[in-house]
Image 1 (tube, rainbow, N blue to C red):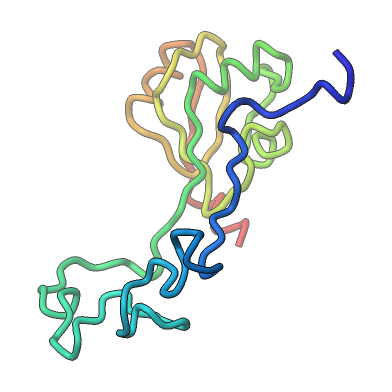
Image 2: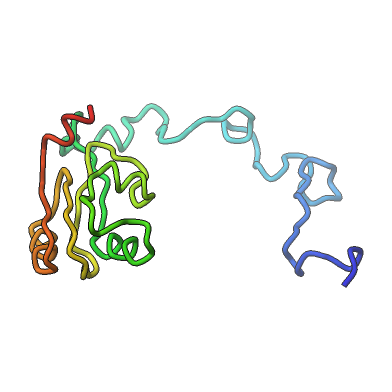
Length: 159
C-alpha cells in the first residue's frame, strides 16, 4: 500500500450541503427554510417559547430539592483495590489511607472523602482508613482478615 492509495471508506466523507446557491441546486431561494416567519430568519433562539403562552416548563409543578452542601465522595470498589494489590501498585501490608489511594492512581480526586463499596472480591488482609464504607464492604474486609476503619475526621482534616 502506498500513500496515494489511501482513501476513506465508501460514504465516510460526505460533501457539505450548499444551500442558497440558485434554483438548480434544489436548495435555492429560501434554502429549505420555508417562507417568512421567525424560523426562516437568522439569529433565532426559540427554545421553549410558546408565542407568549405560559411555557410548559413553567406550567408544571416543581418538586424535590437539591442540597447545596451535599457531600460528594470518590467511590472505590473492593475488587479494584484487590486488582491494584495484585499488580503491585498498592502494598497490602501497609495502611491504605485516602492519600495512598490517590497516589497509587486508584482514586483521581479525594473530593469530600473516599467511600468503599463491596463490588468484587478482596482476598488480601488490608488495613483501610477511609471516610465512608458500606456495611457489606466492612464485613467483606473483615472476612478477608483485614480491618476497615471509617473515620469522619479524615475529611475534616483535608479541608
